[in-house]
Amino acid sequence: MNGQFGLYTLIWLMVLLWSANFIVGKVALREFPPLLLGALRIALAGIFVAPAFWRRIRAGEQFRDRSDLALLVFLAVCNVGNQMLFLLGLKRTSVAHSALIIGIGPIFVLLIAAASRIDRITMRKTLGMLLALGGVAVLVGQASAAEQAQATLAGDAITFAACVLFSMFAAYGKSATVRHSTIGVNGFAYLVGGLLLVPVMLWESRGFSFAHVSTAGWSSLVYMALFPSLICYLIYYHALKSISASRVAAFVYLEPVIATLLAVAFLGERITPPLVAGGSVIFAGVYLTERG
Image 1 (cartoon, rainbow, N blue to C red):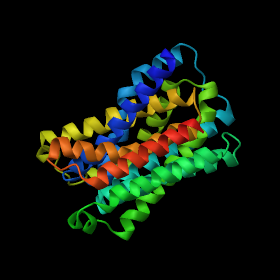
Image 2: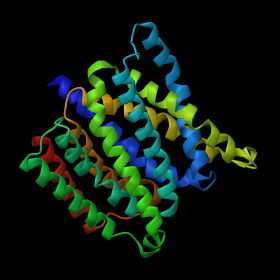
Image 3: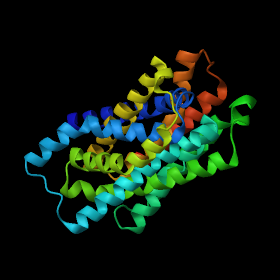
Image 4: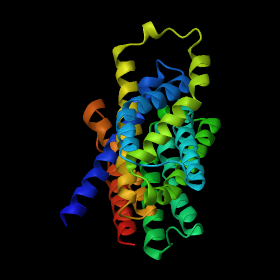
């Protein structure tokens, strides 16, 4: 029981940190262009994880098997692509649209994992995910006209592409946990991703005035690199060692609820009947999925 309690406590922490990323990301995008922000975020996450990754190498963790390397490179590309496209999409769409599109992700995770025979589709999981997605739609429906006006078709399409990459990362990541530690998988992903993005970083830095970035801008970048990028993915892979990919991914549905509650706490927004109704439906859907 204690092991399960500790695991789900970490998962709740992961969801909380990811939920705040919607708001923090909007703040950071006021000062950084999205491609530069994404490249800096990945590179900084790589710097943060490098000492622990090096210790794993010295302790004997190996990255020489070709099939393993192919999987790890694929996961690194999915991880980097997801985070870069998320920022590009968030720049061009509303938080509400972004939350709804990302809510489709757990369904993709279940379908991909089932097709790969990593997971299995059950009636409870299917109904739970559809129920939770309906709750997200209720929450999105209460977004203000001003917020809805921020959404564009291009932004929604980019966010959808990010969702697909995250789904592949989440589904196939289960296989990587069999042979490698959470530090090993994430360290490989961020160090390889950081190296791949060096040309993007150099190109986007041309003419950009880093001296004019405010404390809030730098703090947002550090938050995004350390918590949603590194800490959350470490928790995610740790959870994959114990439960199925679809069950871990189902917690993504809680992000719009928590993001809205954070807006109530810090931005003065009100608790409304759609928030209570949508949140209740989402919680019911996630519970049903977890029982599946």
